[in-house]
Image (cartoon, rainbow, N blue to C red; front, side):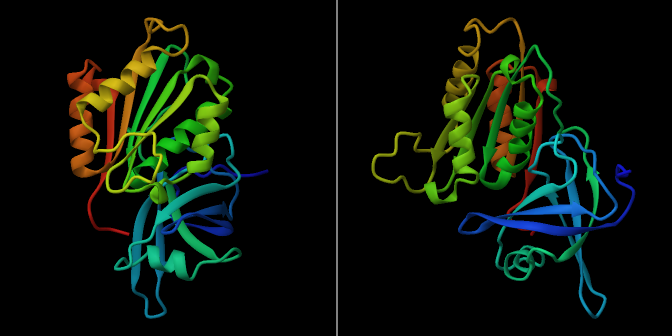
Length: 261
């Protein structure tokens, strides 16, 4: 019988598959050696690399997959050329390799699908990763029809949009999900999305879209908001959400600095 892993220390996982998402982002499917791993959407794992001389480096990566698929977990890693861990994954790791990890880790920035709430997700760059876990969890939970959701996603260019195909499919197939893109540096010819950094008017528009979904009258349900991305992006977006009337206790944030992986 498979054993559930709940942050019980360092474990070994086998890389089952590698998928390129963008020019500098890849997703790695990990299969825990000791069995299935239970987690909640929004959690992360720590990954540790050990050099032949014993030097170790570790980084935290959000889980991208849905909890409903516990036999393996996906982590999506953006390449930073001067990093210690991400170049190894991008240039060395192949299917069949093994890596050390521990987890799942994290409590406040988690979400469980439940009826009676509307979901506003605001992501910047690779900050979309844990938000994607939430959207995948929503779709797999059997409660998607009762949970309107809007993702406001800021990317540098259209070539930097992670999970673009899957997000487009979600938006097209599910009337209770909308994906709103904004590009901050370059927009291709014919781009119909937004063309600036996330500001309060953009968040206001996203809330308006969310309130118009489902029965169209807000259904009397509360809005829960999750924001993930660079520190300044998160601070500003969370402030906008509160200023627009979302209860502060319903705004959850996770941020990363300019350096790291």
